[in-house]
Length: 427
Ligand code: PLP
Image 1 (tube, rainbow, N blue to C red):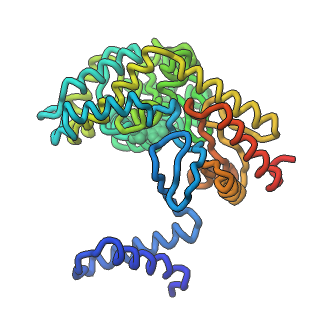
Image 2 (cartoon, rainbow, N blue to C red):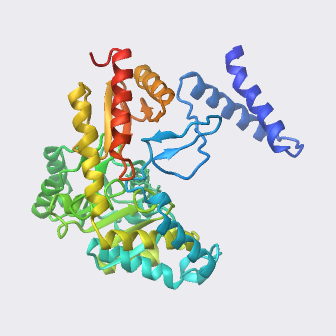
């Protein structure tokens, strides 16, 4: 029998539906009723196990300072992927507005029917030049780019070797492809080598890894990976969503940081984080691969073209990044400032000097309680716990942006120190 607690969320949902959507009166079929009963039970389980994802509603632009609904304060935002602060950069906004005026709201078409404008071709050229590659292809998201790449390039004769902590979109993309699948232990080169030896029987071997892993801010050992790729006749694919625009001396990414730009074959990345934060993703690499994707990749062929304002914003971002590395230096200094002060105060910060700075706390309740107390002090951060990270590895993920001032960084550290002492995390 359902407990009162189990019924509560269903009651709330019904009230919400009636109040806000003025739903059509419908006669539900037995099949639909059965489905909804099962879905409601699943929702109750999610709530009861404390895994419900609440969405805090922001009432301003994405920036280092934001306002959230039902709160008059401007709070300091340390949880966006807005690494370079370009989401609300005046030049980026103006470029988006101009593209909207000149090219319209959208294409109402996929690329190969009538959805390609000059600005799409220009952006693809800027992307490939930025990465020093032969060509690039745009997608509606990097999730789509990851859904398209593996099944297009590999088939049942081939092997795909993937780090076990790769992003969900890589895992899903690999599921769609028929290649022989190997999952190697996180960053474990010995395990990767064993799997490469086994995969020698296959025609092609692709090693797929996130350049930077978003939960720990740890960087893939690309030099070793490229060495193994050479030794075992494989090629390397990297997902650079948490690297493009700000990692490496000029922001080209993890391959630049580790000096292997010429040894990585294919790069997927997003326009939805450091590169303006609107939406969109891409693959860049050898021209034949890009040509094949244009002809065979299903998320590209069967999904709408990127809207002109999004293209306009991203295009201006590449102009800004190509002109100067100022923002790259800026975020690197802010990252060092935050990490240095936090470690000195006694906190454990995971990762390899990346702007993703996970403050390691182990305990899930401690992480969520601490995030809540920090919000009361005007610092917006999020606690991550199981199932997003393993049990006992809860943390607060702080993300530094070039748009934070030194004072913003210092204020966050002060708040962490106060709350950390209050909660017994540091002494
Ligand atoms: N790959 C990684 C490593 C990511 O972190 C994300 C976004 O969270 C994606 C892919 C998907 O990117 P997009 O938001 O463009 O679909």
